[in-house]
Amino acid sequence: MKKTSLILILVCAMLVGCSTAKKWLGLDKTNTPDETKVETRAPLVLPPDFDELP
Image (cartoon, rainbow, N blue to C red; front, side, top):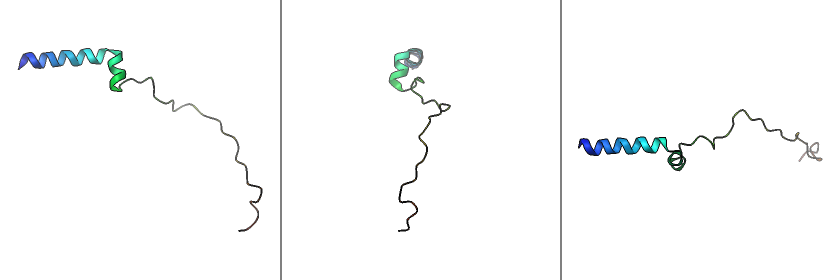
């Protein structure tokens, strides 16, 4: 029992330290979006027939 739990702990510790294992498990933080980045957008334009009533 102690031997299997020790092996399991060692395998988990090796996986956490490995960058490819982090990428494979989705623990990698390189693909996160940048919340502080501001994108410029084109100004709003009214349609030409906006003043007409339906």
